[in-house]
Length: 472
Image (cartoon, rainbow, N blue to C red; front, side, top):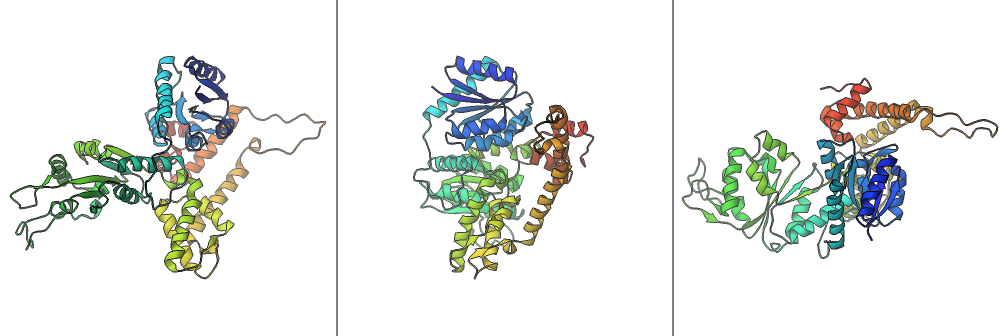
């Protein structure tokens, strides 16, 4: 019998969900708080977690990764009365199986629950068997899911779109897909679309005949033809000029290339991989990217998580790059001191995995003769940001209502002090969080939404409630 964990602070909702789960022949267990739910998930064996978003002790969206990393690797269905389209998107980006709004009906719950259970029963334990990977893997469920997607992509010929912030390892994933595919013996041709000169982009991609343009004194083979028999990787594909997109779309459809100034088309067999840090859907809606090309690019989509969503993997990544850097510099193996490890885990890593690699490389270069690396070997900007963050945290703790701290035990003869109502305490904590959010985001609406995971409408509503404002 399958098992479902329900994490929701609303007793009637929990009981209603339990009835739905049990009507499907599944075992239901309940938890009224996020902390208790995480404890149960870590020690139990659950197939699915039904997760509320707004819980007394935390945001359920922030716990999706931790729940998925539990030993049983449960699927997570987010279910809440605070739902909106942006919230649904945030849940999906964090790896949720589905997103359902309250009040849950039997019909609305049955499909997602049964499909998640069927998937659990049919999927292989892992797709990584035989998949050669040279990078730092980590243990975050989002990262592991991306590796499994890459392994499946390597066994197919489908186009793959790899998305993620700068430095998340998009090209590394593309190279791994190629190296593990049937085209591994063929060429891997990377194209930095952001670096293509607008006036020469077409001739560089498609090639050109002699005399096609001023200075074309001989025929030139384009990058697409160079990928014949192998893989073409369009990095930062969102920067590809619109007129070139139209021509490339025909090449994808016909698998033929006409060099600039050439009279005939030449056949070309290549596998297409592409990557971007931009929102191509928004670009297509704004007319800045061809929608028909976007459809062709995303036969499969691999969305790489930023490092801030996998903080538990920072030291794993650092250790991986430390070994590489020591070997490259011909240095004896080194270790990172506890104080330096604490700084590494406290930093936000806006440059993601690439920044970790660069920082560790610099640490090794500065401490080449030393067996242990310390905070003094870290870049100054990193140490400053960590120090500022720690000071802000201490300031918030000092400003927080006394109910947020554990008071000293009262004398046995005294009655316990009465805490504020939950509503008053929540409002105080919400305001402290929003004030820090404004500070961290520079009061920028887009950045505040990105950090908090809130939709813009919900963010503005909360700010208005607490008398706070953004810059725009």
